[in-house]
Picture 1: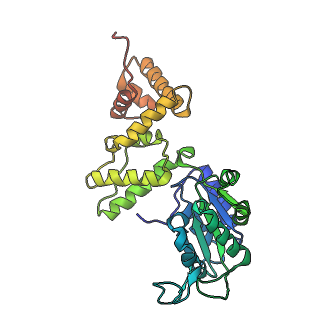
Picture 2: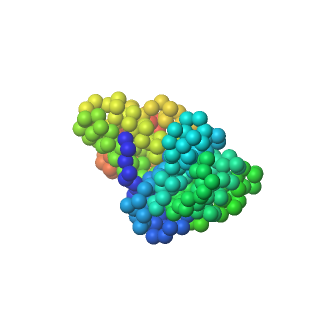
Length: 320
């Protein structure tokens, strides 16, 4: 599902978006840092569409997907006859973005030689097509993105410090999904709605328990991984059927169990589960294990309480 909408309710993401909109007022280079799947390209497009270059081209390129032997011809273009197969003049990526924005995604994947050539273009603001002996002036705003820690890459000799300072005049860090769990529900509902419509189905509801289970997962693939999981759940559900916890993939459930084991000595997730169990037990004891009254007190349905008892393995130890 292709969408240019950035969906969030969290303060962390709200702060990042507010900063991006301030950065959009300038033409200074921006380096967007964040893990894979956090929405770096969406934010790059926001920077472009919110600025004075909005009506000009936005050209995105995945730096890690271009082989080194094709770098110059792809980035700078070529003249007809420059090499076998060059049957006509072709502008490169930088020229195609002239007047607008070029988005260099995963710039940390460029080899040292490619970094040097890219740095020259950014410094001189001109490109020379392969096979030509003249340079062409360009005017582009550069937005780069990386899922690597470039400062560490500099220390290990894998990234040029001068290029880092050239692209990182402004820096924006996007928070991972695990640091903004309140966004899981709105994102899940957004994706469920989108994929249901794509499949020609009624928009499904999502059970509260489903959202609780999803919130226990660490989402190493971030929003992209959550989107894939919701897509799967919608595809496997019936038309308009509620998305129940039983549809959550075994891979996600294994990840939750492993995460809880790792956090057993005081990690946030383990403490949340422990706290939830404690509250439920105290409430049940308060009402002498009358589940209807306990569920009402907790603000959940009786069926929802039963599911929690099963998931959290809560049993009444006193048979009396």
